[in-house]
Amino acid sequence: MQIRTHQQIDQTLCGRPILLEHGKCHVEMELTREMVADATGLVHGGFIFGLADYAAMLAVNHPNVVLGSADVKFLKPACQDDTVIAQAQVKKTQGQKYWVEVSVIKSGQVIFKGSFTCFALDEHVLKR
Image (tube, rainbow, N blue to C red):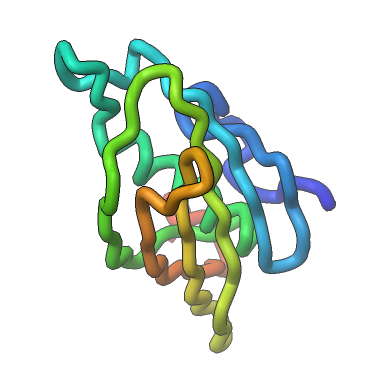
């Protein structure tokens, strides 16, 4: 399946798709030194959120998809040199509205869960 959205995203910052199917996506990301928040090697949660958001956008895979809201939980930390995988699945659609569930997994454990509400707009959000 071809990627139809977020085509210019920097995959070193948001992850690399490793599975893309209708309504489903897995995105893998290597956590780097540039993502670290402190001397312990803890990765800033914004990078984990960005990974999950990107996976949700790809699960919808519409050229004009945008995030409307997210309800997320950070369950465990992630550190430099970890590899994480976001698994996104569209759970429900209603017109242009999509509800997507995302889990981020590290070493077989869920470290992040989120419910993302996305909208597939008729035109690009900046043209509205």
